[in-house]
Image 1: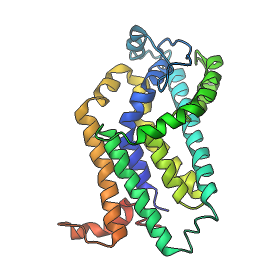
Image 2: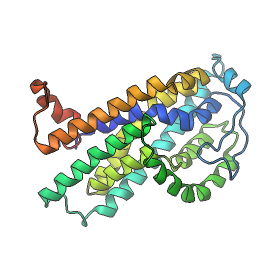
Image 3: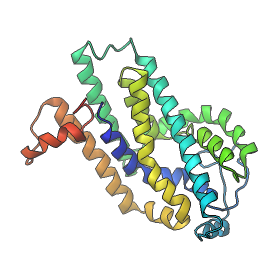
Image 4: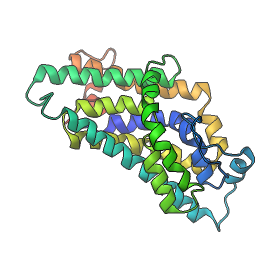
Length: 268
């Protein structure tokens, strides 16, 4: 299975992840945090601006523990994505029969690329259809969120790992769009691989946000940056739809070789 599009989608979509998880990333870098409350919604960790600014200051004495906390938090978060992907893919295994039904497989690939278009529009704030999925996910999050309280402050790698594993279930439309694709993969192993690739794509910017603090978060939340990243995600979807439909790529006949690498369903 070609995993590059999912990694690239995660990398572009991570500007949204920094908005969702940037607060906790800054906190892991050294900012103080309050315990989450039931009404905090999609951003349950509240951190103080002065502490977040202090998190950007790197001291040789604290940099290694900080790196370890940020790394273990992201490892826990990605592990939750992998588990969710395996569950989503496993639910469809034996039901869709994608390997044996070519027309159904083609439809599934088209839907997977349409989800990239939806994710790109959501990232650009041009369409908020995925927000409905986030609201549905709040029902699950209400049960998960209280488990974070004993982990604050996340002053050890073990606490950061456990918090990251819980944070992976935070309602997020972009994650849900990838989970739909994981479900369409037809088996649990492929679903896990898709979510692993997506999660690894989100990691670099979240890691950087944990080290740089609020400065990087403010930059990534600029409209121009979000639009650029949304266009990248949408381009993968458009390219994939053209590939699924067997159409020529307008003005770029030489791109067909790359399409096998860049498109969902292009190379297996």
